Length: 142
Picture 1 (cartoon, rainbow, N blue to C red):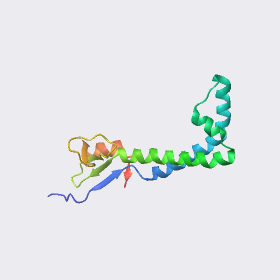
Picture 2 (picture 1 turned 45 degrees about the vertical axis):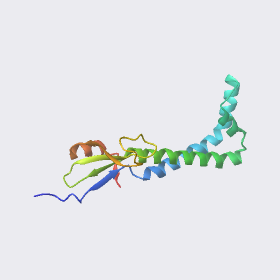
Picture 3 (picture 1 turned 180 degrees about the vertical axis):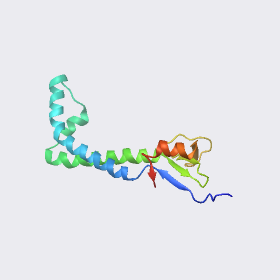
């Protein structure tokens, strides 16, 4: 008796992390808008110099620093999370119960073999029990 292979489940990192990282980056940017001035003053008194981006952020008035640094933090959080989700790949669990981690190679990834811009490559295969115990808590169904 053979099982149908059309009943595959794709498992990967949840897209909710995109929202969490974006909100976290915005919060870090908001907090940094309040502390960048004292940190630059402390660095100037301690070693006589501070990095250019920090000095530039410290020169902004607080009413302008709050939205600018919050937006920069949100964009940074979004880019980090989207890169993580894109590079982590997915697991395709087929009808036989054997998972395969697949990663789509994009233009930022090194190419293997043909010059195509994206393709799938099997990175790992093992039993269903191993995959569930290893990825169960961190990976969700997409």
